[in-house]
Amino acid sequence: MYDVVIRGGTIVDGSGQPGFCGDVGICSGKIVQVGGTVPSGRREIDAEGCLVAPGWIDIHTHYDGQATWDPYLSPSTWHGVTTAIMGNCGVGFAPVKEERRDWLIKVMEGVEDIPGTVLSEGIEWEWETFPEYLDALDRRPMALDIGAQLPHSALRAYVMGDRAIHHDEAAPKDLQEMRNLLRQALDAGAMGFSTSKTFLHKYDERKYPPGTFATEEELMSLGTVLGEAGHGVFQMTANHPAMEQEMPWLKALARHNDLPVLFNLQQTDGAPDIWRELLDQLEQARKQNVPLFGGISGRPLGILFSWQSSLHPFIAHPTFKQLQALPFEQMIAQLRNPAIRSKLLNEQVGLLDLRATTLFSSFHKIFPLGDEPDYEPTADNSVAAMAARTGRQPLDIIYDLMLEKDGKAFLYYPSFNYSYGHLDHVHEMLQHDSTVNSLSDGGAHCGYICDISLPTFMISYWTRDRERGHKLPLERVIKRQTSDTARVYGLHDRGILKPGLKADINVIDPNALRLHGPEMVFDLPAGGRRLVQRADGYVATLVNGEPIFEHGQATGALPGRLLRSRRGGIHA
Image 1: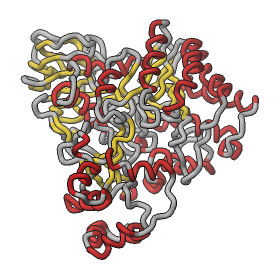
Image 2: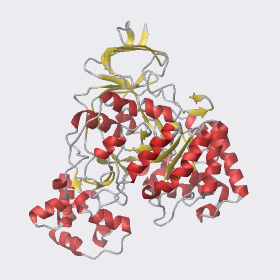
Image 3: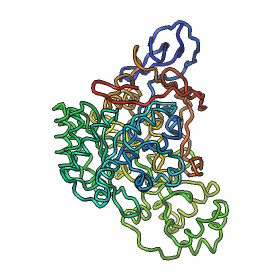
Image 4: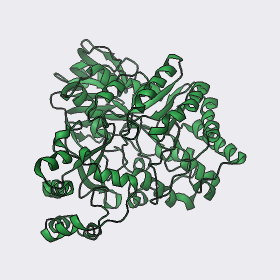
């Protein structure tokens, strides 16, 4: 008798092959049989009319702090994620000396918009070194499997102290010590090493994290440690318009190590066609068997404006800054006051940085989001179009739109991946063999971005709901967030429904699958806020053969493990 039988579903196994009907049998956390009729199980899940697919593998999250207090890494598990990789973009919490703990929290707060009070309250520091951090994670119960990468900013500050914070060039002895610590982290099971060169990442308002200005010599020296260890991914976030300048050394590192090098690939308004040139370079690398990959998002990076968000067009207005101190309902009541409204709309605002000025004045790219979110909106639904139709001022329209739903309505600003006003280029990127689904940013950007729902969006939108262009085959979309993401991080024991592999499985009602609108909740430590997004349609999510969610409710089972990458494979 099997432990669990998933009965009578349409199996889309993650390989990209056409789906087929049948049962799935599970014993001792492993898949034993896929297809056909399986004998009875101690527990049976009725999957008639449902999709049966591998669990989603999310390789770009920032749960480095949350993993120490939340066994579900919510809201990722609400969206069928069964494996999550964190420590991206060069930020994280190990290694760290005691006197630098608060500083690391400031960096994470600035770069990833995770409230510092939440991290200070939630993290119980039980480590100094990265191996000790992994051990601390290993002691905690988890619903899903997690893996961690060594972040450059923490490593550099640990070795160089204030010289790292001031962006001094690493001396030879600094490089050697960083290399030694990276090797220790990899030996302990780090999934890789991450760094960032983007100018978008700042903390304390105007400071860049250590590593932002690291030399090519430093990055190559650290990157080659992965090759010496024989495992691990080199992950980098960079300045998107300048990515062409980074490609030669990234490609050289991937070729030298014969290990994956992964960079974030997005379309930006400042250089809207660079993505195509980068795809061409990825194709050349693929033909040469060089493991260079572009991490892409399946939709625009969406900044959400609301009266509760960290960003909106009135955030710097003196009147709003005063109103922020009020309880939310009182603040909204004041914002409805005609005198307050007039004052706020007409008062002068101090100088904003270029990014904020662009965000708050690009009315052609600001859209109402709604309860059924539209992530590919048309130009006629923009605030600019509303202003043209009505003769009203755009800020006047934004003010009213954000007051809807008792002051909790969201406006949508597609920051990256929407220069053309549609997603046809994303459709093209999603079909390239050297791009990989990424950039959900789970656990991060708590106050103004909510892209953690990407795995659900990929299925519901790209295979079923898209009307403005071509869709994608269901089998391909499932493969992209299961076996494709697994292979980049060497997770060869999962990502496909196949006998002998891990029983990480999603059972989905395709007719019921839909995204709710984002909402702001206050459930983090110290009452901290975060944006979450819920979904319907997940009948069951299994990790290691145990259901962790059924019909949207946690079962209480915590079968997840810490993943440790080693030469030759992954150990949990």
